[in-house]
Length: 124
Image 1 (cartoon, rainbow, N blue to C red):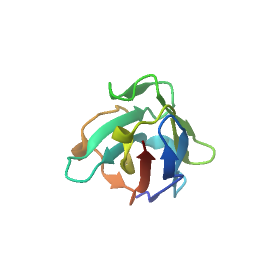
Image 2 (tube, rainbow, N blue to C red):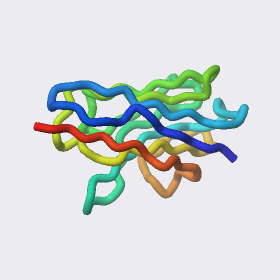
Image 3 (cartoon, one colour):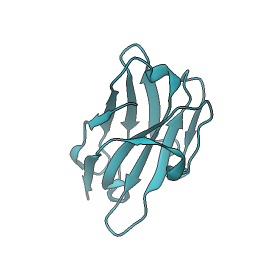
Protein backbone atom coordinates (compact mmCIF):
# COMPACT_ATOMS: atom_id res chain seq x y z
CA UNK A 1 0.00 0.00 0.00
CA UNK A 2 1.11 3.53 -0.72
CA UNK A 3 -0.67 6.80 -0.13
CA UNK A 4 -0.07 9.71 -2.47
CA UNK A 5 -0.55 13.41 -1.74
CA UNK A 6 -0.17 15.99 -4.50
CA UNK A 7 0.68 19.65 -3.98
CA UNK A 8 1.91 22.66 -5.90
CA UNK A 9 -1.10 23.44 -8.03
CA UNK A 10 -2.53 26.90 -8.40
CA UNK A 11 -3.48 29.73 -10.72
CA UNK A 12 -0.85 30.90 -13.19
CA UNK A 13 -0.85 33.06 -16.29
CA UNK A 14 -0.19 31.60 -19.72
CA UNK A 15 3.53 31.22 -20.28
CA UNK A 16 4.19 30.68 -16.61
CA UNK A 17 5.52 27.70 -14.69
CA UNK A 18 4.48 25.47 -11.83
CA UNK A 19 6.14 22.57 -10.05
CA UNK A 20 3.89 19.83 -8.77
CA UNK A 21 4.99 17.44 -6.05
CA UNK A 22 3.61 14.07 -5.04
CA UNK A 23 4.66 12.74 -1.66
CA UNK A 24 4.30 9.02 -1.05
CA UNK A 25 3.95 7.25 2.26
CA UNK A 26 5.77 4.08 3.13
CA UNK A 27 9.33 2.89 2.71
CA UNK A 28 8.94 1.13 -0.62
CA UNK A 29 8.61 4.15 -2.91
CA UNK A 30 11.50 2.93 -5.04
CA UNK A 31 9.45 -0.15 -5.96
CA UNK A 32 6.84 1.91 -7.79
CA UNK A 33 6.76 3.27 -11.29
CA UNK A 34 5.09 6.68 -11.06
CA UNK A 35 3.04 8.83 -13.38
CA UNK A 36 1.09 12.04 -13.67
CA UNK A 37 -2.35 12.19 -15.27
CA UNK A 38 -4.76 15.08 -15.67
CA UNK A 39 -8.46 15.52 -16.15
CA UNK A 40 -10.21 18.62 -17.37
CA UNK A 41 -13.95 19.16 -16.84
CA UNK A 42 -15.99 17.07 -19.26
CA UNK A 43 -12.95 15.20 -20.53
CA UNK A 44 -11.42 11.81 -19.85
CA UNK A 45 -8.39 11.40 -17.66
CA UNK A 46 -5.29 11.62 -19.83
CA UNK A 47 -1.69 10.59 -19.45
CA UNK A 48 0.86 13.36 -18.90
CA UNK A 49 4.17 11.79 -17.90
CA UNK A 50 5.67 8.67 -16.35
CA UNK A 51 8.95 7.70 -14.74
CA UNK A 52 10.52 4.33 -14.01
CA UNK A 53 11.39 3.12 -10.54
CA UNK A 54 14.99 4.20 -10.82
CA UNK A 55 14.20 7.42 -12.62
CA UNK A 56 16.30 6.37 -15.58
CA UNK A 57 13.41 6.18 -18.03
CA UNK A 58 10.67 8.71 -18.68
CA UNK A 59 7.74 9.07 -21.06
CA UNK A 60 5.61 12.06 -22.00
CA UNK A 61 2.40 12.82 -23.78
CA UNK A 62 3.05 14.58 -27.08
CA UNK A 63 1.10 17.59 -25.84
CA UNK A 64 3.60 18.27 -23.04
CA UNK A 65 6.85 17.03 -24.54
CA UNK A 66 9.51 19.72 -24.32
CA UNK A 67 7.54 21.73 -21.76
CA UNK A 68 7.08 19.36 -18.82
CA UNK A 69 9.68 17.30 -16.97
CA UNK A 70 9.03 14.45 -14.54
CA UNK A 71 11.59 13.52 -11.92
CA UNK A 72 11.75 11.65 -8.63
CA UNK A 73 13.73 11.62 -5.43
CA UNK A 74 13.54 8.14 -3.96
CA UNK A 75 15.23 9.25 -0.74
CA UNK A 76 12.37 11.71 -0.19
CA UNK A 77 9.66 9.40 -1.62
CA UNK A 78 8.56 12.20 -3.90
CA UNK A 79 7.88 12.59 -7.60
CA UNK A 80 7.80 15.97 -9.29
CA UNK A 81 6.33 17.50 -12.41
CA UNK A 82 7.97 20.69 -13.61
CA UNK A 83 5.59 22.47 -15.96
CA UNK A 84 6.84 25.31 -18.14
CA UNK A 85 5.27 27.41 -20.89
CA UNK A 86 1.82 26.66 -19.59
CA UNK A 87 -1.23 27.31 -21.73
CA UNK A 88 -4.95 27.40 -20.90
CA UNK A 89 -5.19 23.89 -22.42
CA UNK A 90 -3.12 22.64 -19.48
CA UNK A 91 -5.89 23.59 -17.06
CA UNK A 92 -6.97 20.41 -15.26
CA UNK A 93 -6.91 18.46 -12.04
CA UNK A 94 -3.52 16.75 -11.93
CA UNK A 95 -3.21 13.32 -10.35
CA UNK A 96 -0.22 11.33 -9.21
CA UNK A 97 -0.38 7.55 -9.68
CA UNK A 98 1.75 4.53 -8.75
CA UNK A 99 2.11 0.93 -9.87
CA UNK A 100 4.31 -1.70 -8.24
CA UNK A 101 5.92 -3.04 -11.39
CA UNK A 102 8.98 -2.18 -13.41
CA UNK A 103 7.34 -1.01 -16.61
CA UNK A 104 5.85 2.40 -17.08
CA UNK A 105 2.53 2.69 -18.86
CA UNK A 106 0.31 5.45 -20.18
CA UNK A 107 -2.92 3.61 -19.31
CA UNK A 108 -4.74 4.88 -16.20
CA UNK A 109 -6.27 1.47 -15.40
CA UNK A 110 -2.77 0.01 -15.02
CA UNK A 111 -2.12 2.20 -11.98
CA UNK A 112 -3.37 0.96 -8.64
CA UNK A 113 -2.71 3.87 -6.30
CA UNK A 114 -3.90 7.43 -6.86
CA UNK A 115 -3.78 10.72 -5.05
CA UNK A 116 -6.72 13.10 -4.77
CA UNK A 117 -5.26 15.57 -7.24
CA UNK A 118 -4.11 19.18 -7.29
CA UNK A 119 -5.82 21.83 -9.43
CA UNK A 120 -3.86 23.70 -12.08
CA UNK A 121 -5.55 26.67 -13.70
CA UNK A 122 -3.87 28.63 -16.48
CA UNK A 123 -5.37 31.99 -17.39
CA UNK A 124 -4.99 33.53 -20.84
